[in-house]
Length: 443
Figure 1 (cartoon, rainbow, N blue to C red):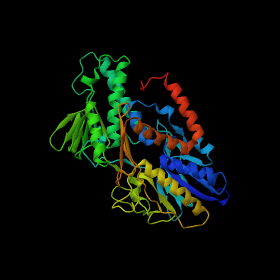
Figure 2 (cartoon, rainbow, N blue to C red):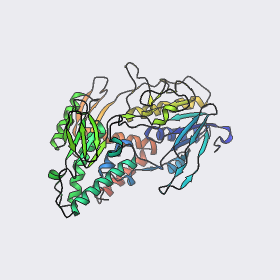
Figure 3 (tube, helix red, strand yellow):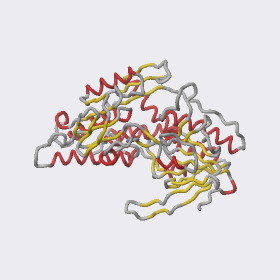
Figure 4 (cartoon, rainbow, N blue to C red):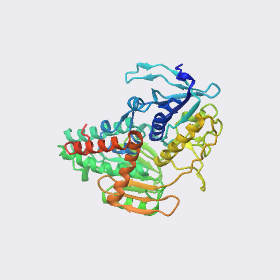
């Protein structure tokens, strides 16, 4: 067992280094950690962090992850918290201990043995995974884009397929370079637009045997009657129009019943050929949460929490982000799984943790504020609605202003991690270096 309770300080463990978890660890490290009022430990199964809403750009090849990933060890060093590499796989609430599974390298060699950490306060922020709903063949023949590793895996397959098509002696076969995306939420439609652009960029770099308009077909399958079904109808229709301008094939009202090796079958009997299938329909929290030492979960494995973000069973354990089911004040149902919600909840928990360390219990209740939704279709368009898209009273925006707003969301995340001066300098440096680099990842 690793004992991190140095000097008997209150020990806060945060499991999950996504946007919310990393922002929380950084803020608590800069306050409680720096002032030696508490020990802060962040646990994650990977060594680096990339903002999840950018994963579709990594998958398409329009973003090089090496230039945007953040090293957890460095962030911990700079911001007065500890980082431990590993995947949580157990919890003992009676002993207040979390168990971390052994860590193996790519050759299967054990690098870090199983460990146990004691906590005074535990915060679970492990996000969500794609929900394939048990559809036949989905797990075997499709790729989710929940992690950087999965996004890079898809990009390698796409790039290999393009190179294979360029160098093969025979003519291209129908469907050889077709991509099917299951799910027309934000990830699905943004990925479709990025793929339209990057496949054309790739062919411009010497893959002259491929005609993207003729040989690359991008399709989206959505069970609802329109793309972006969770967002306002006007925004949905605008995105649908842009996709069709890009000659993306949209199959709305089609429910996938099977994913095969060479295509996708829908409930209407339609078969859509594909060389690559991306599953972007639905989410669920990681499966291990449903059996986590008696904590209450819902049907998609989310930990049920109070409006203070405390779990309903144990007031020393908190959860937030996509892995938590938090009541939405004034609405039926829970807070939607969005990056803006995780950011807001992290801010709420900073105050809560400070009170908890000080021995107080009058925690603030979290109230979700919907600032709208933005959908970025790469170089082609950005559309969105501001000031309460779900709750009403929204304002439709598009074009350059919408694109600047979309990019500002990422900059806000970076500012919370690095500060405004650092982010400003990084932005200038990337703008300069971008002028001498390819706009698509070529390997």
